[in-house]
View 1 (cartoon, helix red, strand yellow):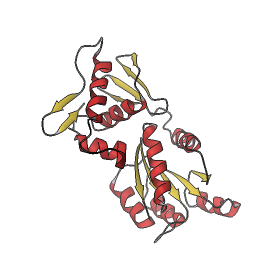
View 2 (cartoon, helix red, strand yellow):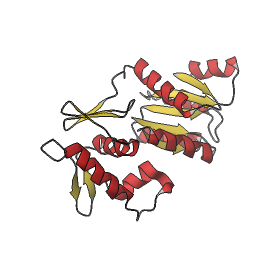
View 3 (cartoon, rainbow, N blue to C red):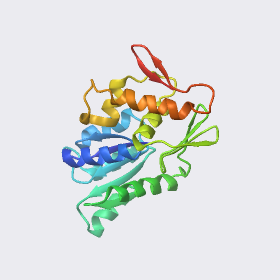
View 4 (cartoon, rainbow, N blue to C red):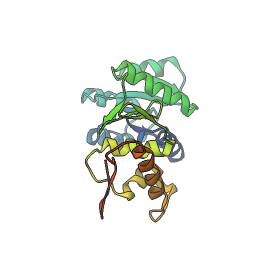
Amino acid sequence: MRVLVVEDEEPIASAVARGLRQLGYEADTAADGVEALEMAGAHDYDVVCLDLNLPLIDGIEVCRRLRAERFPGRIIMLTARSGIHERVEGLDQGADDYLVKPFALSELAARIRAVTRRAGGADATLRARGLELDPDTNRVRREGVDVHLTPREFEILHYLARHEGRAVPQEELIERLWGERASPFTQTVKVHMNNLRRKLNDGFGQPLIATVRGKGYVL
C-alpha cells in the first residue's frame, strides 16, 4: 500500500513516513499543497495523510481539488485543530477521516486500515509469484505455507512484489525504505536479501528473487 504524507514540518513528515515504512507501507512526503497535488497526480496513492495547515495551498483546498479531479484514494486529515467546524469542513470537502495531532503512529495505521476497508479494500493482500503478503499483519505465505520475516525483510519483499518483473536497484531500496539513515555503500541490503532468499527458498523449489547484474533485484 502506498501512502503520501503531506506535512510542512519536515521532522514530523519524516518521522511519520519512516514509521509507516517500518510497518510495511511505501511512504512519500510532500511539504506543501502544490507539491501534494503534483505528486498525487503523478503516482497511484492508496491513502493521502493531509495536514490542514499547509503553505501555498491549504489542506482543505488540496482535498477539494483532489476530489474534483476524481482522486480514487482515501484522504485522512491531520491537524492540530480540534474544533467541530474544521472537522466538518474537511469531511465535507471529501476527506474520509480526521486525526487530531498529536497522534500515535499505531492510531494512524489503524485509521489507514479502516478507511481502506471502507473503500472496499478489506483484502489488502498483495499476490505475486505464489506469494501472499498482508501489509496489515506483515504476514507472508508462499504456496500456502507461512514464512516468518522481520519487518525490514517484509518491507523489501513487499516493495519487490509491487514492482514484480522490474529490476529494482539497491540504491532505490535504500532511498525508499531507509531514507537518509543508510549509506549507499552499506552492505545491509545484501544481508537482508540473503536472509530473504534463504527463508523464501527453504523447502520450496524455484528461487523467487534474482540478481540482475548492474541493475538490481527482481521478483
